Amino acid sequence: MFNIVKSIRKRYRWALIAIALLISVSALLMQYVFSVQKYDAKIINIAGKQRMLSQKIAWHSNALINQTANNEQHLKSLAHSLRLFEQGHTFLLTKNEQGEAIYLNAALVDLYYAAPGNLDAEVSSFIKQAKKLTQQEQANPVMFSVGEIEALLKKLDTAVSLFEQQAVTKVNWVANIELLCWFLTLALLLIELRFVFMPMERQVLQTLLEYQQQKEFAEQVSQNKEHFIARASHEFRTPLQGLISSINELTIPSSQQQIQRQAQYCSVRLLAMLDELQDLQALSLNRWSLKPTSDNLLTTLNKILAVYEYGCTEKGLKLITELAPNLDCAVIVDHARLQQIVSELLNNALKFTEQGEVTVIATLNNHQLELSIKDSGCGFSHPVGQLELDNNQQSNHFQGLRTGLTRVQYIVNALNGDIRFENNHPQGAIVFLSLPLEMDTSETKPTRLPDDLKCLVVEDNPLNMLVLTKLLTALNIHAECAENGKIACEMVAKKSYDVIFMDLNMPVMDGFEATKILHDNDKTLPIIVVTANTSDSDLARAKACGAIGHIHKPIDQQSIIAALNDAFLPEVD
Image 1: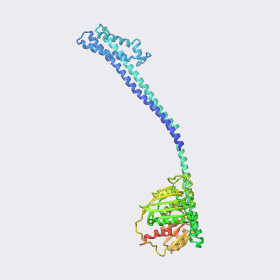
Image 2: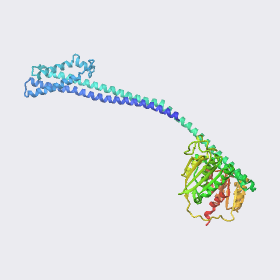
Image 3: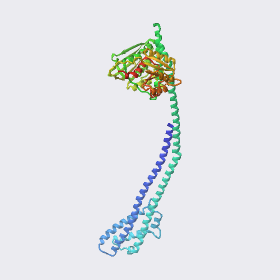
Image 4: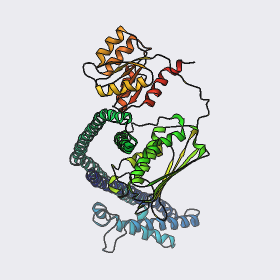
């Protein structure tokens, strides 16, 4: 792109310089024409005055010769007219240093100096005789006779005509040059069109085509990456569902409970990494938004701190928590995203702390969550003003997938918060997190789901089906199962259900088609999507088919309760 810009700039400059030169030459010629016309007009005016002055001189001279009245007036006027006539004649015959006439062309030179005209000699004689009269001497009266004056006026008329022709010739010459410049400008524009602009247009189009192909390729790569991440997440979440449920349901002696906590910690980290990859993809494509809900702030923080108690114990670290009592209140925020922030910061602290402690301090001041996480690890090798979003520039202090902290920055910015990183004295690092929160002042009403709920679980994976039915049974909810959408439609046609939990990816008939059919037949039947697919487009498609909510795998009892509350509580008094 920079090469084509450089090439276009160079061609444009040369084209503009060429046009500017031609326009400048044309403008200078026009200025020259105006100056020539102005100067030629002056010369023609002087030549024309010579005729008038010669007539006045002849008239005053004849009056003096004939001794008419007012001789003093005639003498005065004759002297004035003669002075002007002589000055004009001298000006017209001005010569340069080489002795060449400045204002006379060849025809005028012949008129003034060559026989038979010899106008210069005749004018000089005319002036000489008139001067005698001004000096009150005897002059030749024949010089001022009608015949002689007519002959002089005729030659002066000829001079005026020749001066006019000379001026017209100059104007025509300049006009021809101006016309030539105009033709040259047109020719230059055609040449530039042919050899500059048309090739430049082809180059631009070719470059744009190449960039369009690169863009389409990049979009295809991004789309393939998105599909791969979504598919990989789906495939990982399915066995994770069974793994997490199996770990939680294990009944083991107290001597082995440490192993169970280790498995729980590892499964949570695996799930966090899946969320990390998917979130980063969604954030980079601007397909991500906050989902604020009302929940207890202290509960939200304690849930994530409990997970990292094992991590600290495993490394021999001490986890110190100082949570202010005023955190025990309902706030409206995206609690899941808040947990992700705290989880990532804690995980990073654990990585770089080999001995000592990790301290979490949190308080609520003026609707502002103030949270700090300190560790006694290696600290930062250089000051960190803001999270380094470029993986190639991140310091070694940030390890792992190197995407979690990028996601943290996105989330903090979306929550209008602030995050700072500093070295902790005498050693270690400290992170300061500040987030504005909205307090939930609404009255909390007791909630109760309808009794004897009958639900249908539509799931093709036996392990997921078993996990979901166990969770529902633990909630005293009767559940029946269908292996795909077609069987589910047949079962709903024969029997009524209060709610349906629908998987999306199934053989024979997938969850999208089954949801649409069931919703079209009964628009009041709640359908909750249970899927490992977290793609916003697929969730929006499921909602368009008639689903009222969704649960992401791996599922837990709390997510089921939340989904059922959303489905039934509006109808409960």
